[in-house]
Structures are given as C-alpha cells and as structure tokens.
Length: 115
Image: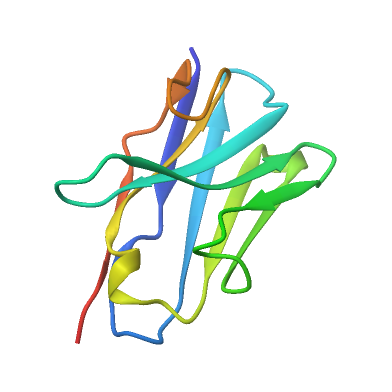
C-alpha cells in the first residue's frame, strides 16, 4: 500500500524555523512535491525534489526553504527558515503525476506562523 506520512508541523513565531518530514512507504518515489494550502486559498506548489537530489522551489520560498532527502529511508524533508505569516498553511507531500493532481498525497501537517 502506498503511503505518505507528513510530520513536523506546529506553531512558530515569525522568523522561526520548522523541519517537515515525509515518510514514503509501499513504493520508491522518483520525485516528491511539497505543496501547501492556506485557509480559503487554492493549492500552491512549494518545492520538488528528485531522487537524484535535483530540486526546485517556488519564488515565494526560495532562499528560505530547503528540500532534502534520505533515499535509504525513503524520506523527504523540508527545512523552513525565516518563516512568515504568509507561510501559514497545511503542508502536504505528494508524488506521481502533476503537483496539482497527484496520484498520492499525504494527510498533511499544519504549519501556523503567528506571534
């Protein structure tokens, strides 16, 4: 069974940091997206990492977020620094297909940036 499980979300003050994890099981991913959805807004692509380590970022997070992976553990991470209130959203990892309509997506982890 294909499963994606996110963790690491929470409440953080502006300027703070969080590290999200996405543990994949039941398959070996070739690429993994991080996407997010803020209250009342649509899904937004955040980052992509390929199994070879290549990556890409949305302009809104470039320079603040870093995606990485532990291929041996089939796990992907998203290090988020200098967090802003605009980063408040539910964050999902997803794979297989386009980022806005993936075949597999986790249940998400909530990130709230607030003082």
